[in-house]
Length: 394
Image (cartoon, rainbow, N blue to C red):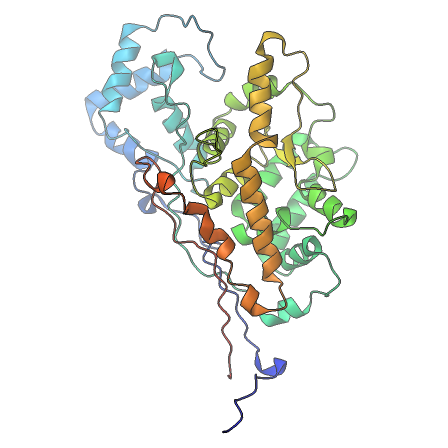
């Protein structure tokens, strides 16, 4: 019998491509790619005199709903309720936005005009305004970039270097690095640049930098991971009340949208910890909070626990509500499992044995039949993370 062909030498593997169907690096979504953009829906509404009048009336007659109302909610004028009801039967019903779309702020303003939830008796505060209509295009790294990574580097340093080697990621990272450094850094400017980075950088880059795994006891790696978001500038110097943090967040349409999106996709449905949606959506929603006033971060250099930078001290009779909000980050099994799975996936990207890199870890996120049967849960993404090795000159 003849000897089987030997594997090709490394020099012949020149274009080695890692294809990750994450939708990373794709252009900003256009309105036409959304099922029912609120921008499109409002244009249709403006063409209908009845809908147009109801929309403008609703926009002007309701006060801010940025803070939770007390149990004894004030009476809502009948004409406001009528306007809200008319819009629920219009083209604006069910309209959504996308976190990477152009004119996102305008879209979200329209969404929250329609969802004047508690002040109009319409309890929809837990419905995310975002539609995850993402097309999946391969994201590529060539072998030359991988060869520039030193074997003894920790994975957080490797992912940081991969960002540096990508022109767009490097530019966005430098922008927030400059805004968030120095003794006179302005927190709001820093947060704005952080938001831009996690919104515009390729998702694979952003998740790799923030959710990079560290070996047990590797404090330097853990410190690098914790410092990814420049906490000295991005986070408040003294921990504010978690409830005050939420109040400020709900007063801002973008922060409110990101918080509701996080609550929608990282919500444990029952006491067993069954998660509402896929891990990929939970992580996308979690990263969406970075750059808002509700920016979370790793709590230490020795583990992957995350939390808000706030306290529940002095919450009085709202102590339980405050602890529930804080625990949604620090004691959330859905978020914890999603972070652990992504870190495991990232560790396998650099596995020495390609056979270990099939990434079945992400395939287990939707095996719960109860989850698949939920009518309101969007259809499962086909973004099971798979590594395809294209070997040239085989």
